[in-house]
Structure formats: C-alpha cells, structure tokens
Amino acid sequence: MSGGKPKDKAVVMNWIRKNSPTREELLESRFVKPFAHRVAHSHLWRFTRTSVRRGTALGLFVGIFFLIPGVQILGVALLALPFRANIPIGAAMTFLSNPLTTPLILAASVWLGNTLFGLHTHVADLYILYDEGASLGEWWNWVSANVGPALLGGLAGLFVISVVSAVVGYILASIIWDNWIRLRWRRKIRRARDQRLEASTSDAQAG
Image: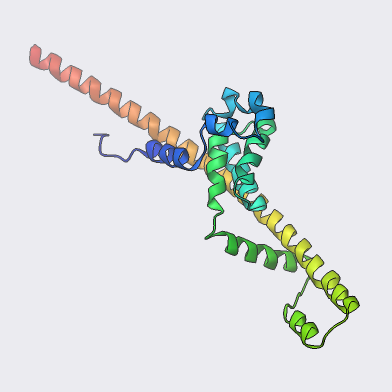
C-alpha cells in the first residue's frame, strides 16, 4: 500500500550529495585545514531538525551575500561551527545563487538599496562627462556622489535579501522537515497495520 509513494528523502539526499562536497573533499582545502578538527565534527554532518534548518538558513545567507563560488562553501564550513549548522545542507543551498540567478539577485539588491537609501544613480551621467571631457575633479565628484552610494546601497540591499532568504529558508526547512517526519510515521504505522492484518489473516487461514 505504501510502495507507490515517491521516496522524498532519497531524492533530496541525492541532490545534496550531488551539490555539496564530501567531508574528505572539504577537509583537503588548504583554507579549511587549520579548522579541520572542528569542521570534521560529526554533529556538523548529522541530519537533525535543528542542524538542517540552520544549515538551510546559513547556506542561503552566505550563498546570496557573497556570490563568489568557492568562498561560499568555505564560508558555510567555517560558520557552521558556531551556528551548529549542517554543512552538506548549507553547502548545497549556496548553489541556489548561480550564473542564472546572480544577475537577478544583483538587480534586486541595487533596486532595494536605492529604495532604502533614496538613491537615484544615473549611469547616463558617465557618458555626458566623457563627451564633455570632464576634469579629474569632476570625475571624482561623480564617483563619490554616485558609485560610492550606489555600491553602499547595493550591499545594503544584498544584505537585506540575504537575511530575508535565510529566514524564509529556515521556516520552510522546519515545515518540510516536520511534514517529512509525519509522513514517515504514517508509513511506519501503515506498514505495522498491514503486517498485523497479514498475520491475522494467516492465523485465520491456518485455523
């Protein structure tokens, strides 16, 4: 009766194994080696409700805020220790920021940062300065008035998006984990009931 249902955990675990480094691969990194004795701790690789949701939140925050492949996984590995987060889950979550999603994330962060700080940077001004042969002082004024605030606004927007994504990921991971546990218990109960029915049927036929 329960054999026809999809094996959700197997699908998720296969995706995690495919998109996250193994413990051995991570410990071979020259950046991680100084912390290898801590990163290799079993509780950072164990799948529990707390470690999974923390790993999800940490992976989303680091993956979105840093946006640099390699640095993301390293950041997750090092921050997983104080946050007691699951490293495989965190490393896999960083891949949600990729060459396809990064332009959208950056555009959203600049828009959000400009909205929060009231910035209105006009890139067209750069072409005007170039055409008019602006002096170094005029170029510096444009950079300090536009590029600096725009960069600050972009980083602020990126930070906000990272935090919101981490919170949403934390909540969704909790919901998915709880639903999976309930489904698992239902399958166990159903399996035990089927076994009892089979046993009682066999006893009745034998009698």
